Image (tube, rainbow, N blue to C red; front, side, top):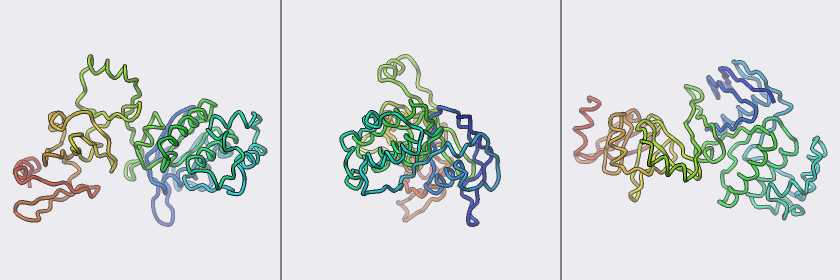
Length: 328
């Protein structure tokens, strides 16, 4: 696979703008995840597969014949057994490795002769991955790979995905869930309709390294960390809409998703006050840039409305401080 380059891609459909100012480099063996909606992902995949043309912008290095896609709502032939179904795809591909050997890497060996209609949803998702694996694409596009999987299903899918990548297939994933992308990708972007793709900082570290680093390295105040499985994702303050204390645990709210922080609300308040955050309530820290409205229900009851329509309480004692900060 050669490097794919997308420059300022704009796609309008039915008089609506679906993608705007999308610029991305996809090198061979890259491990990219993009947070975007189903409509945006479907349009993006179709552009790469060249089943629909871009409205404007330039794409280079795209070889549609060597690109496959898995959509979350892909269908199957339910009456076929797993082996019969897969052999049909193996027949039209150049893949000549023994199918029985491959089934084990996708945790499907024990259901090889089971009809697809009797498979669990977890198994069907791995079957979809194996189906495209047999076609040996240069680039594999997957939408929402872990959505609705069980915990055990997630582990098995991640193992199969790792095997797919180790076999030389470049995989690009999209999902609306940032946590899903943290588990599956090492380079993560968020698609913003008005500004294109924004890179999210991500680091992978072992528990031992994390423990050692915490003792010897001061924590930078311009990034807030959240542990997800064996990865640590770092958020810039401007990415966080608000922080909530839930049963004594600090939860970072990013685009409607919640990520746990090991820091207390008091620690986060000390670090973030100079970076545009305000302790509007004992249980909430709000990013002042995200506030769009202040509603007064009575002389003693106030609510902050954020740009994402979240509603946060504002303590009566904090009203004067907020007025001083943003001059209203």
